[in-house]
Image (cartoon, rainbow, N blue to C red):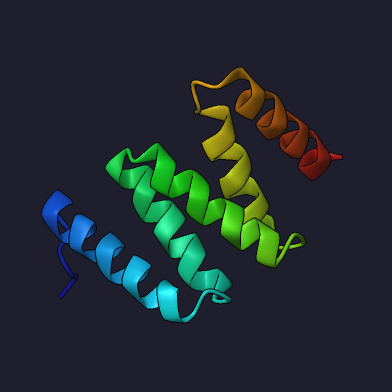
Length: 94
């Protein structure tokens, strides 16, 4: 049987658990990526951007980290974030 998707409350608990775990394992790129994805699903731009930034800083060659960070930046209301996200996307496709 297929598992049911997580509801919003379960996603929020997952995000809290990930943040707690990452305090003790800040070098875990996959954990930061998962927190970034969770932040995007929850519509929490700050969490998503911060998590993807950490993943990208730890492993700039990781395409998932770069793409997630670029997407979070381009969704920001800050024009400077939008510019940086666009630059990162251009580098990814070149």
